Structure formats: structure tokens, C-alpha cells
Length: 290
Image 1 (cartoon, rainbow, N blue to C red):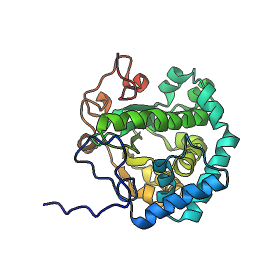
Image 2 (cartoon, rainbow, N blue to C red; image 1 turned 60 degrees about the horizontal axis):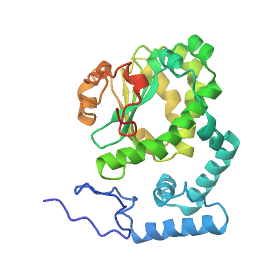
Image 3 (cartoon, rainbow, N blue to C red; image 1 turned 30 degrees about the vertical axis):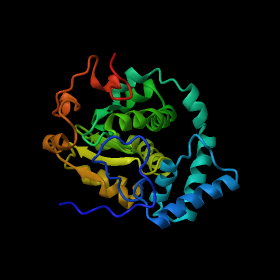
């Protein structure tokens, strides 16, 4: 028999229809009294200081920043205000409204990065195929700056469209992604030429969109990957590193434990074959097939 859950100081979030849903610690529906008070104080200070943005700073979002800083209010606020400053400098609002990645299909040939359906916990699955990278062709089609703008555009869509649609489909809050990073065929020289982009992308993910990584699978890791990993690891915080599973070429069973076979693209051992290719379909609860 499972242990009864300790009473939470915060009510269950709205819209939960899954009777088996049990929020993880530090989330709405599973907050201690101290955590709840910290959340309320965070919100109150942001409002009093004129930093509160109603449409973007709901309780779930503020909790992501608090969890990222182990509920240390001073550090969480510092992190959130730095993210707000970055939004202004990077022009995030303008990107949301006006960014058009016209070169998407061309870039997909040389560096596929895409969201595709969801895992067994309802998370959107994000795939990045670093091994397919062709630097010369990629930067003939786009620039590093546009790649980063695209990343931010997709993060924003992830928060405002993908996660709400996945939450509705799952019947409980879905706040994180399930990432597959495919290193099949990656060359060290190519990696080093794109490492600035990967470093900036990691920094944006961790510092501006904290606590959005749920599961992370690195597949087809070549023997030389330990060298690459030594470069990447210091960019990541310890919580992130713990979520990463490094798999060689025998990754299929592990992925299928987490992702239904009908949702996993065929090239990774699943059964999905979207018309026009999974990498360009943007299939998922956020984009119902007509």
C-alpha cells in the first residue's frame, strides 16, 4: 500500500482530471507551509517593486525560479530579474510577435531540432540531431543569431502553447520536456565549431527558462563523447546533470520505456512516420492533426 501523501499547504492546481496525479515536491498541490509563504512573499515583493508581469508570472512560473534556487527567495528574485532584463535586451517580445524562421526546412537538413508528440508522462518530446550537423551548409542557410532567436521563439511557444496543450491532454500539469540529443555521426571538429551556439543555448535554457527539463537522453554517444562531455558538463548545474542519461547505440528499449512507440519517430526505434517527415510536422497535442 502506498504511503499517504503529507498534507500540502497549497491546493491542487486547477484543471486536474487525472485521479492518479501526485505533484512532485515544490509544485502547486505539494508545497510546505514555508514554501507557500516564500511564494507569496516573492509575488508580493515583485508587485510592490513594479516588476510583476501578470500574464507571465503565474504561481507555477514563480515556483520554477524558486525551485531552481532551492527556495532561496533572494537568489530566485535575482534570477528572475536577470531573466527579465535579458528579455528586454534580447528583444523577446518582438521575437514572439514577429519572428519568422523562413529557412526552417533548409536548416532541418543540416541541423534538425524539433518538437514531436509526447512521452508517457505527457511531456512534449524535443529532438536535436547534432550528428547531422553540416556547419558550412547550416551557416549558408542561417546565422547563429537567428538560431538563438529561433530557440527563444520555440521556448516561448513551449511555455504558452505546448505545455498547456500537453497538460490538458494528460489531465494534470506538464511543466517539463523530454529531450533526445542524437550524437550519431557527430564529429569533434564540427562540435567545436558549434560549441559557442550550444553553450549559449544551454545558458538560455538554464538561466532564462529554469526547471523545464524533465528527461534528457543522449543517444548514439560515440567513444569520443567523453571529450565533448568534459566541455559541456561545466555549463550545466548539478540538478540538470542528474537528469541526463548517456546511452550508446543500444538506446531503443530505454527510449521506449519513456515514449510510446507510436509517438517515437521510426529512426529511433518507434513507429511514427509523419507525412513529410517527423522533424517538420510539429505533431503533438498543441497541433492537432486536422
